[in-house]
Length: 77
Image (cartoon, rainbow, N blue to C red):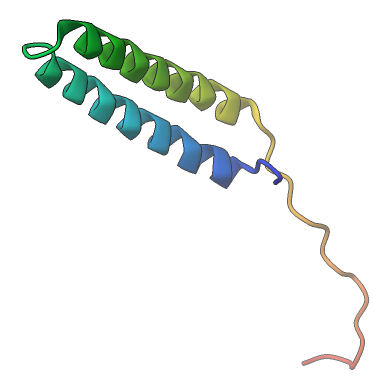
């Protein structure tokens, strides 16, 4: 699997939203099971941090386009 700018961008948002969801579940679970709530909050924050770090990675990636074909077979259209 080749990591293109578009795939990194998709992965960024998946990680950020998943981190927010896991963090919210952890906060809501904190009342019934504090240990599990803390673990979920930490896991959610880690997902958020990885997503935020990938924003910097994506910003530094170069966008390369495939070279255009210069051969003209079949004449002008």
